[in-house]
Amino acid sequence: MVRKILGLSQKRVTKKAEKNLPHFRIVTDVLDPKGTDGDAIQSWRVFRIMSEFVSGFELLRNHGLAVTFWGSARLEPGDKYYKMAEELAARLAKKGFSVISGGGPGIMEASNVGAFKVGGKSVGLNIQLPFEQKLNPYTTESLNFDFFFSRKVMLTFASEAYIYFPGGFGTLDEFFEIITLIQTKKIERIPVIMIGSDFWNPLLQWFEKDLIKKFKTISKEDMELFKVFDDIKEAEKYILKNVDCNKIKQL
Image 1 (cartoon, rainbow, N blue to C red):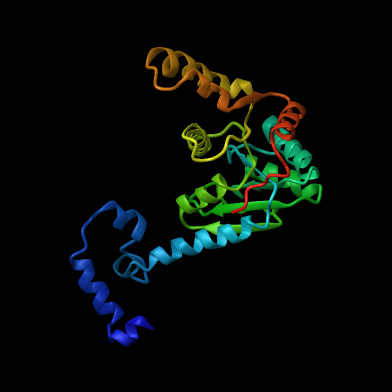
Image 2 (cartoon, rainbow, N blue to C red):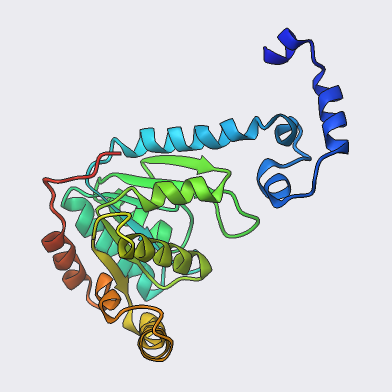
């Protein structure tokens, strides 16, 4: 409508702007200059980003008490951590928690399976990737995202507790994101659970040896921001003890 009022030709504007378009990362990685709709030129893609935030907040505000699961997309149903994630999700769903995951396979699927099987709320916030990622069929509600950062915000600010199973770069990225937000007091102190000491202990030993003692880049107190469990029942007990179900965040 705006283009019609101004009498502008989309093709003419796009072609002219592309000629003088600087090769900045915000253009090449975020605004997509080769997009079929000329998003980079008109900056219309900003509204697509906004729409993901709006849709995400509208969905999540209906889930007062919630827990977010993270972990590898590569773990199969027979894996012990897959089974543990399924069991923990089922236990928490029975206690009234909505279970939120990235919506894909592996640990994400396991958590959704656990909630789904017991009739709980099972939410998947999915993103399309070249491999591994497609929405698992065990969600009661879901959203698909094009942008990692908008999806990350939804996963980060959604819950009263965060649970990390063994995973790759994505899981570690989300772990450090949450810990940084708590450390810098950008979000309230909430339970951050790490399942599997055999996976997490080498990382924690590096924290102790290098980050605290050698380089002094974090404080000893920062090690109290998270807790490692090997027992699902103990993890559940810790979450229920440290989550005030009467004081739920409102998005």
